[in-house]
Image 1 (cartoon, rainbow over the protein chains, first blue to last red):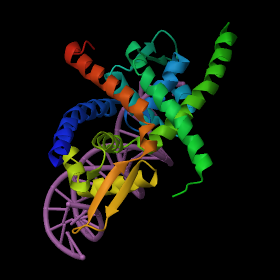
Image 2 (cartoon, rainbow over the protein chains, first blue to last red):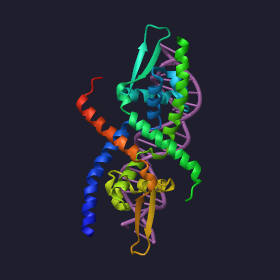
Image 3 (tube, rainbow over the protein chains, first blue to last red):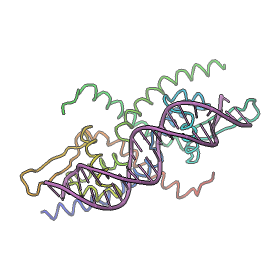
Image 4 (cartoon, rainbow over the protein chains, first blue to last red):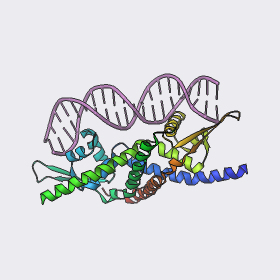
Length: 127
Length: 127
DNA sequence: CTGGATCCGTTCCGATACTG
DNA sequence: CAGTATCGGAACGGATCCAG
């Protein structure tokens, strides 16, 4: 019977490892303080310019925003569009189709976040 | 017509802000390199002891695991159970009901991670 | 306006050693 | 077994100045 438990746990370790690896892959791309936020704003606003983006994401500095945008562009979540015909040059950022595959992730996080906030307010913590 | 766009965007900013805040609340609690992984393993294994946990999460050090567990316990995701009647003392960690509310989050992340990995392998990147 | 460059403090985190 | 202590490097991120 002790053995059964061990066998069960050994089985768990396999599926568990799969899930773990998949979540790890996801986190590798979208974790960090800003990435998901930028993606969300980009998706909701359609096209958007650098400064407006910065204004919509409270607390982010130009340096960090710039770095994050490069990273997101490399990973195919954002497209950078330069309107060279205008003066001064206008640069717009738009979200890609691929970034839209994160819909479920964003929604589940958003839902959970709302509940969590509610719970924290009500509980007053019975630790 | 230019005006319509601005009105639309102004509306977006409101709902956008809500989503942003909710996702931010969620990320505040579960972001970081290890938190979700620990929660996943804990959920799949039921009860588990410190060293086994460390073995199941490749790369984590004892110091970091210890810190993360304390943090997770404070936030109600993990329960620490001490069996003082045994010698040597056995300490077990178990996941809480509250940690199970993350089910959707974990599943959507896992699904997306699997797809993402597949895409990366196939694309060979047509940037 | 759209960032790049630099400086610098903080925080994270990995390695190792150690304790009861 | 279940952690703690200490160290040091790396990464993150804010502030400021600068350029096209």
